[in-house]
Image (cartoon, rainbow, N blue to C red; front, side):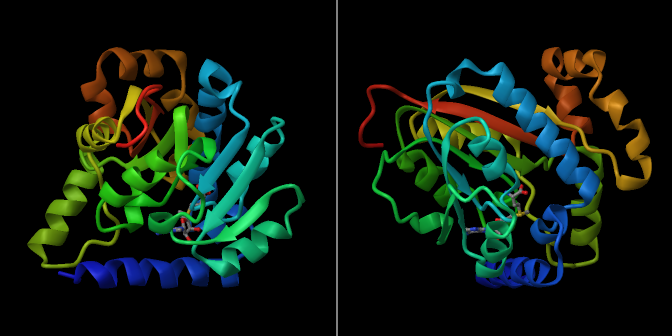
Length: 253
Ligand SMILES: C[S@@+](CC[C@H](N)C(=O)[O-])C[C@H]1O[C@@H](n2cnc3c(N)ncnc32)[C@H](O)[C@@H]1O
């Protein structure tokens, strides 16, 4: 088993490497192009269906990578800080336009803005590369003001392919490659950090070779099934996004 620190260090090196060698958003972030496509589509759907984002002006994109989401949010008329610990990623993100975005090299565990500075924060693709979600959730929750909105994602540890992968790695005594998370644990941490109105958005992502069938996973029927029978989402969704709001009356959590 990798020592916890070396897992995070390995990922940091990988992210810097991805950014040094790729030019496209997905490659810089280490996603497959189809995976980024599906994620971005889901986030846009959440954004356009949420009343909570409309009045939020200042946004943090924590672990922004190539800045895909930062650019989307700025195009909605908001102010954005794109934060990432990988300088090569930010250098490439900056070259992709939207000059009003502020780019910031920092670790998500030590966000260099005063508590409550942001109205909203997103964090995608990050907690899978951390030893645990505890510090990231508390750091992000502190950074938004009471009433502020957070949306983060995780790789679902309870979906069938991930259950199999975890089992087979353990059986072969191989270290974990990515850290999977349960929806229950992330929800618990968000609650513990004073977040309310927590909602889960299941994110089924088919492998690239089956991507032509992705529309089935995103159809109204499938979404209805995942919404009303969450155990189906748990078994069949590669990832999930979870959103919440910081309680209005909580100042020190
Ligand atoms: C999988 S990429 C996702 C990029 C972007 N959010 C997206 O979804 O396209 C993860 C990004 O998070 C950054 N990252 C990972 N751990 C971080 C940490 N502890 N602090 C700051 N950035 C981090 C990586 O450098 C990488 O750019």
